[in-house]
Length: 597
Image 1 (spheres, rainbow, N blue to C red):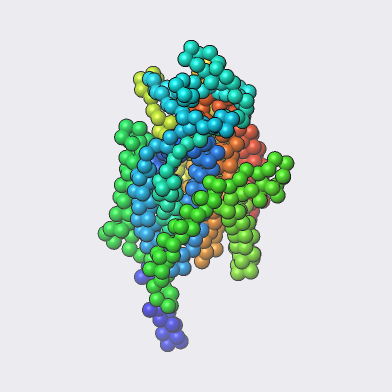
Image 2 (cartoon, rainbow, N blue to C red; image 1 turned 90 degrees about the vertical axis):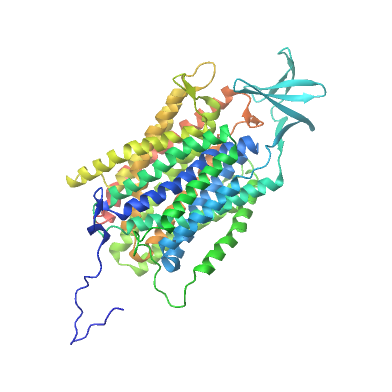
């Protein structure tokens, strides 16, 4: 209890609080960073291991078409970043960051374990002129061929450049050609196991909402206001994220191929349990960090936990609505597009459009001129953040499918990796580059020439665009196999990793520095909300890159390559252009930041 000063008893200076940054250090940073680093590392091990499998799981196990699979993937990742808006607020007001992280970890682990139960692989079939035909899959030396079974004959399915489909007889001749749109690829899948899968994704979304914003808030609380180590501390923290994802994106896809999908998801669940153990049994190392605020009316933790579990069927409903959403009517314009959005899409865009101006109005009323301008700068950068993550997050959807279909996955002819494992390139380059960039930022800051946060954001946007243009360059030089060498894809991830390090750890740090102190958790939630909107739009972009498949496989690699290259070329140019625009705008934004670096 704090004494109230009187004339006879003036308040003495408070020397009871010791800033964690002043205690023993870990690589020059507060020692508590090591525990949070490791906790986040194992959490990301689970999440990215699961993410590396998800799109392939949807297209190869459940045999959803590209549009459904990438839309569902985008919706899931959108919810993963939307729920932190609520989780951050509940931690700020009631739970405290530490309890929120513990609860989120255990719910996510349950979600990953539930994903292990997927049932039998869906059985593909085709509908031609209103008649249903069985589809058989034959694999020879790793190459799969699809056949339509017509009475006692097997006719090989071959897609043509003009969108028609040819059915080839045993001699290789064309038995008949089906006009464009006349061949429908479908699959028989268990409604029960689809339900189980969607419940699992709902659990992961809810758990992540409690974990994601609050582990970052705990890192920010280790540093006093104005501590210049904050950016490099978040960069080190970000490296921990990618150490976890590096190993999981190699091991989980390996187990999925060698043992089964359940083994890949099971390993992700084990990693998540490790994360929970580290935060649950911290041995007092995190004492005083992330504790709940003192409020009247008793502890509401149990009520919040029950409410979170009630949210699971709500998210399940949003997923089912997303899967059943109709395509916009051609020529209906922006009104028709908005009307065709799923409930999730309307919720995301509506929340973002209300949250951004709403918080700005509140900061204008509750804060002074300086605080309002700093919040304005934060919100502008949050909007540009949407563009970056929309394009960067093609990694788990269209780029993974591109790796599966139009990439030669051979490593120097010695061995091959799976399409899911290609996502490890990003994590590898982050781990390699993060220490270098942390040192660079620190040295540039010491000399007073470190690029401002808006400039870093602009560089990131230009970089993500250049990555796509680099891959398109490689696609222009393919041979008759219509597959690019894996090193072109690795080059894209190298460029994207550099861009990511310019925006993501810097962005997390920026939120903790520009936000009004009493709503920093909520602002962290808005930061993740912007990524959530981007994830949903990323799913829409991936749908534009959809190609026709039969039983989860394309029937014409040339058409597939041209489709991906066209989409990547367009988004590459758009991203680079937006980045240049932000660089031009950066002096004004920097002025509004009032010296925040």
